[in-house]
Length: 59
Ligand SMILES: [Zn+2]
Image (cartoon, rainbow, N blue to C red; front, top):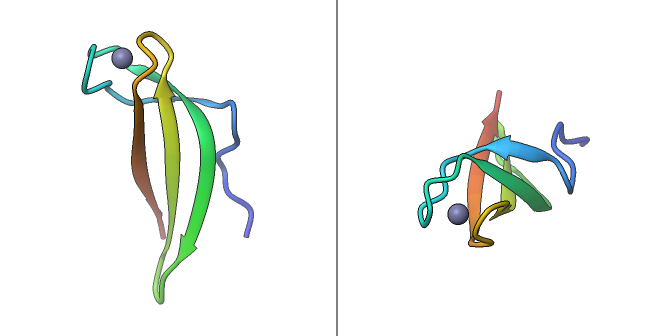
């Protein structure tokens, strides 16, 4: 299953540390469930470098 996210993409997400709102995708980790597909994005703040992750649900 192809994800619409790729390593190196910039996504809009608020950094918990510095509140910068752009983060770079470090890793895309797809997980399939019974009725929906979720993709976990591992991201890094492009300003302060804090690592975070975000679960993206796709219908
Ligand atoms: Zn930050």
